[in-house]
Image 1 (cartoon, rainbow, N blue to C red):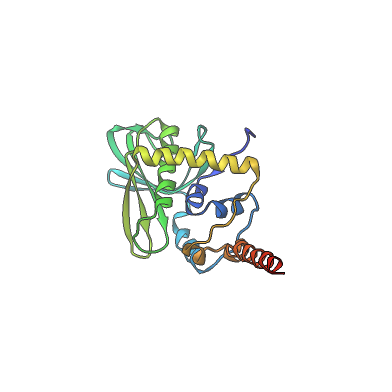
Image 2: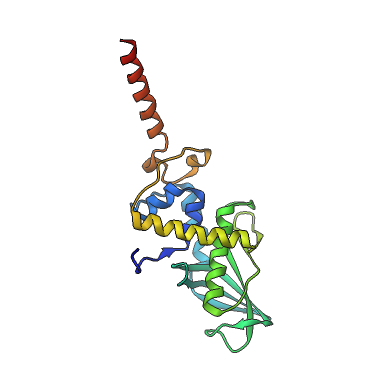
Length: 218
């Protein structure tokens, strides 16, 4: 394994949405924008500027870089609410007070349960925990269109899934192997649909079976 390999945090979400999509992004460096990605990118712009906004006993840090040396992950949190608490931890770049971090991931659309987003958020929390030697119980996915939060609790199931996903991503990166396509309804909304061609393999397989059948008849 290449010790210099690190994996972007966003691939935790990509892999759990579609393994092939994650590989096409990571290995083939493919990208194609559609209406869904364009709207999401536009809505994210306001939190992609580093800042620390003080609100009473809470400091909201936006575009905060995070990393994990254990899982070889790196990336940025859209926002982290640093809630002042004597049971929290010291955040060196703020002050000498103690805070409990509450990561928030911004997503396009309306409130809904999306496992891949929850795991991406959990991965962010685990990075923060490693960086500042603290424990984070929960965070939230903020759906921009509906302007509502979906609170996520970081239980052992999610934490284990994050560790397993990061390990699988490292294997993909080292093997440079793109998984075969598995067509599903979510392919229609995927921005890489035209590049991935999830139906092509099945069409080719069907064609080969048809030709093979015609030979048998002869």
